[in-house]
Length: 106
Ligand SMILES: [Zn+2]
Image 1 (cartoon, protein in one colour):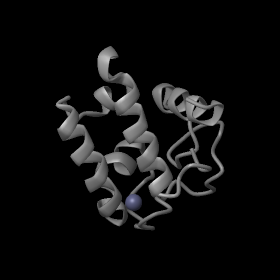
Image 2: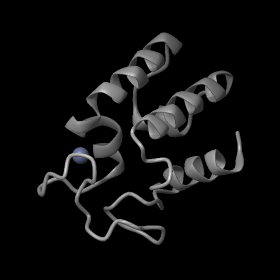
Image 3: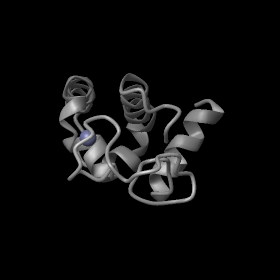
Image 4: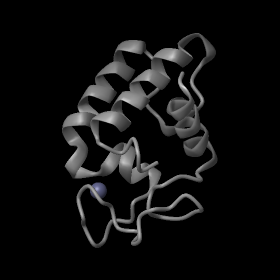
């Protein structure tokens, strides 16, 4: 992983990242999701990864990859993958972050 990828994974694991709901790295002035802009949807990690309706297309690619890797589709698995599939899971997650245009926002 390159340096930026490493930082992103670490921030997600610590739940200290640029998503809107909290934290130090927050460049998002409001807690509202920047993808769907639903005023009732805080930009949490779970919303970003699993629920944001604006990211359904990109999420399909991620969930297809997770399914193919035969690991449990959970936030825990994405952030703490089994060791033998760590690279593949992280690559899929990082690809999702690129595809959703959140690479510089995390
Ligand atoms: Zn959203």
